[in-house]
Image 1: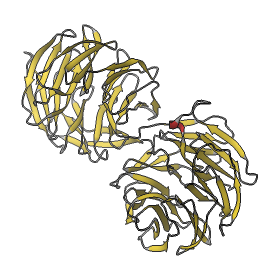
Image 2 (image 1 turned 120 degrees about the vertical axis):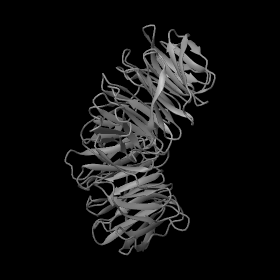
Image 3 (image 1 turned 180 degrees about the vertical axis):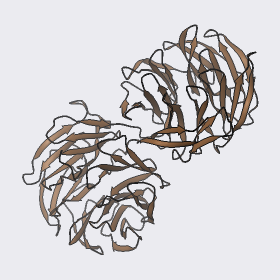
Length: 615
């Protein structure tokens, strides 16, 4: 028996309003790397559904940079830790080094892939230079009175390094070992957000929140000229050179990405995201890279929503937008007929995923304002129902990828949502402190009170089951929207019920508990429910989700212990497990209709698992 990870569909980069978001591309122009939550993701440029995840950081990550050789990645986090690891497997760490007592804002490699300068917001110092293989000191980064936002190392000899800071100055270093040489003040009058040496080493550029672009000599730091004065209308968050060193690209809070000709200082092309004439905060461009090693003029930027925008020099419009979740995925559902996956996250956003390509699409219309606590799908209607901690029920048209109707205000915080067939019509059921509320076509039809507040909900046909805070599992036959006939009251669990799932056959019920155990009940010919097995007990944390296979023979489960497991009804003692499937915990699991398990979790990623050899 085995379970194998077949795909990782990466989340969007983590962004912060008013701050730059580093984006790195390798020397061949094949991959990008960025920070998302507590992970680093290395992603194919041409096929974004192919990615690797590095999970050894224990705190929020901030930056990742490829070495010039392309074999390694250096990454930093908010605690001041820098890790160096294998870029191809994204598993083996080469070293872990504590650089500063605070957030790492940026990293830079030298041309030999041997030295790293890490900078940020420390207490005793704002940066340091180390060797990549041992962490030995090979220089001192000094000269600033505020946090350092950016750093770059000249790739040719003689070695030079430059740093930009909140103190508005540019500091220049000679190496190696790197020592302070000079500082340039008075050119920027606000924070410097980006600096980079040109690929040929002749020039250095700085950009910042004062909307200015300055060029300097790459060997001496002498000021050459300012370009683009007055062009950008917002802070410039990022800059990247073209591979030929004759042009550079900038991204700004004014929602634009601009290409500049270095010799003339003129803007040769500009893209503006969002609707023309409107100010859209989510379309602020906060990071950019111009990948080397390519001939198609591709440029990739990050907006505040975390979308990766692909541009090509000479083409008027954006050529591709790669989307995903920025926060933990907390709810998931699947429409097997249309081969789409539907997810909701802790920031209220929803995405639709193509199960064939792994591409994510956004939903038009107003979604939840915060935590999405449940998603239910209706194959018959082609609709998606979601509930969130804004205490609303929202309906999505799957074909149109848009929210339909108005948000239905719930009487309390929702604990779960399901679709049941009552009187031949699909009804939406929502579990709140009021009980089980029934909705038809977006309007409240009726409700059924419960003796104890619910914790989770599931339905199949007219069969409804709910877990309650008194550790009971109650099963009902929904005859009408107001007539829920009790069929069983199961009291075996000794811990609170956290997840329930009815098999497609309607003959089995899986119940997940907060202590990690799963009970399975079977329906008898007399209509009663009996405990079939309690041997599904390998999880060590709260069971967050259970999903049955289409044939009702297997069940997949996810837990806060970060693991995904697949269980067999035929042999309850057997299981296959994917350890550490999702950093910080699994948010949900489903079957995709073709024998694969799809999981999502607190890392914001969606992962596909092939299951083989299970009875």
